[in-house]
Image 1 (cartoon, rainbow, N blue to C red):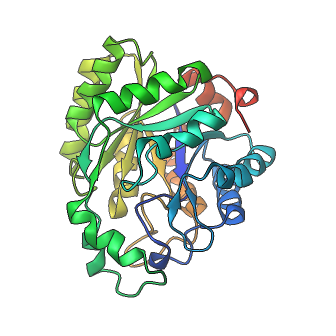
Image 2 (image 1 turned 180 degrees about the vertical axis):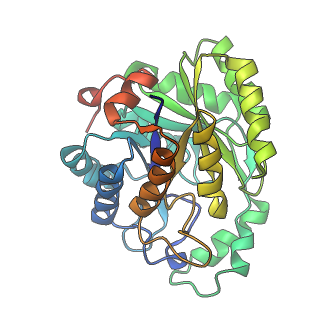
Length: 307
């Protein structure tokens, strides 16, 4: 029976704390949300950190150290740390947690792109913290920078740690960039391709966009990749369902979408995991365990991490 990896991103840099009371901010909240998502069926937990006072995204390694050992002690999930951080950070800031903590998996965006969050100001009017409104408003002039040199720097810096990467592709050009780094021997098969849909600055969220990315990846990588789909906002469950139905893996979580239906905030990332798990099992597919994911992705194992 086909096994489907569920990844879950429990917090991140897209949403601000004022958008949902359920978004985990403190180390304890992030740890608990991660364990709940793992118990619901997520094999991989993708993690950012936030300043516990303001909720602002941070790459402070000491904050990661407060929740990573807790998650590891309470679950068997594969830990996936961000190298994206937030568009306002330098590449050195963004890389520190993955470089120092040596996770099994780290995320890696395959290119520089516009990253527009400003439209959220039309949906959210009141903010708790001074940084939130300017962060969103200024994103119409925001660029997430990951040049070819930046990508090579991250790959080369982490090579001795045997960390593998969730290769985040927001458009077809990013797939070609991933193929370029395979040609340069900085990425090795099987690569874990996370195709991302519906964020302003990347590819759209139509089913044809999904199929175009899948066809392109098949042509470039053949059997040398593991494919997953991330749909932003209201696109999360519909696109994940399509992906599961045609042989892919899925990512959900409050980093990518705050919702559990029209006008209804998800009370946790675990709620979203359980919802997509229902879809997967209704398709007569099996939800992959963390050890299944380790085998499918060729990971080094939880005993080889730095936390």
